[in-house]
Image (tube, rainbow, N blue to C red; front, side, top):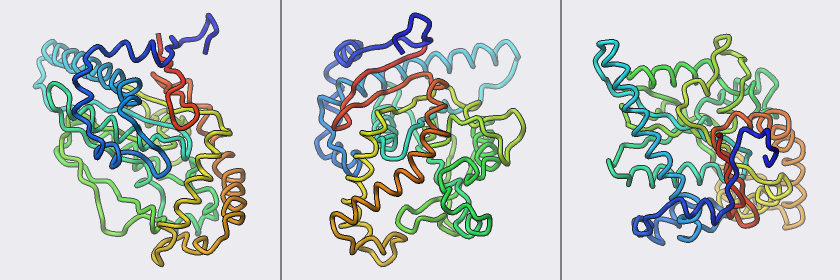
Length: 312
């Protein structure tokens, strides 16, 4: 990233934090808000919000305003009516890196922006094929890999949202059941901003999709949440251990079989799953998309901000 030929400009946390000059906005988030927004094994502080996320939300607010103005100017020239076209933000990154927390934080902060826009959050988990389909195709162990998603359906969803369709529906995924919830839909009704979060949002794989049409083609801005793979592995193992004593205890949990593992067995199992599935997916499918992002948010220990890289 520090090469003179890099397409990115790099900021340290103090440099990035100084770009936000209104310290009053941080008061809009309370300690209770942070508890609700943070991940299972993440601990957010107001200092982290001020240092990393308030500058990012300020930047996005400016870009949203500029994009809307550009669309209005274009429609004026083309003599077209100005309909509601949501600004779409894509957030990519590995399993356990904290992209879901980033998405939730941005949803909250952006919705508290000057114009109080309506911000919807959609995850690509809902576009995974149901387990029965994955089993039939022999790719259950590849869940999260490009071939496990109904990419055509995801692209059609984004095309409808971007076209201003009044109401667009998408499937809902249950992490407890580890499957698509039959008959349940999420409705997206002309929001101002849509945040699309998932492993695969920056991938160029065209399996089951129209040739030369990618998910990221519909994004107005994209973010990649990054960290050293050894750190992500530790976060994944820590999360697995917590889930073993919480969500996995439910008889409805797909992973209930792991609830009786000892501490050592849980660590060994989590590390095996990480190495065989999630690390492989990261190296071969997710990490190669990092350079396609408009902004890279790099984390260090305890999910703290290490650096920000933004395209020149």
